[in-house]
Image (tube, rainbow, N blue to C red; front, side):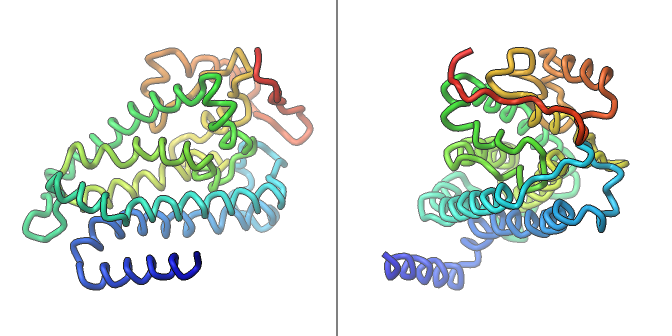
Length: 283
């Protein structure tokens, strides 16, 4: 088993060294996003355990509430499994051949212009928001929530790594909302790389647990983790989207959250009893 895994690693390494096009198409986008993920989240993990050292502590949404060491350990292991799975899928020959068949380029001669990127990146944001909203709503249906998506919702006090803390099936399924937009709007990997950077900042900010000035509000998605689960009839489907929550505004799934925040401007604090998710699979 170990020898087979090592042989696979050596095969991928030799292919990367021999084919720069393969590296730019298959390794770079996923590798870049994973590297950025940990660059953003290692400090957030540190501040979770040492809040007195945290210059952002006054911006914390759930005041005085932190994830436990055991929970964080399990979250990190789950994230590493998911990221390994993502890299294997990204680096497999089937993905490479699929990208070649789709005509995705990586060379300087076909690089998109600034004008192209000016519309392609916003288009990726809008497409991601729509696809993610649909996928996320599907994951909050009864069977999928209890058997798959509930793993993600075990994180009630969001920290940055919550953004990749999923059941592996959920992680791969949700990843379709991330990888499809740049393929649909561009034929060059540069668009994919820039989009992955923006996505990683967006999803980390949404799960960071802090209302950081001049950044998109993280309060609504923090509320989604603390209140929105299948046994909560009132908040079962709320703030399901990303970015400006366009689809939540259209479908009215942001209004219950706005109402709650108006009544509870300080959010969930250390002394407040947080909502409890029922373990049963019935209403």
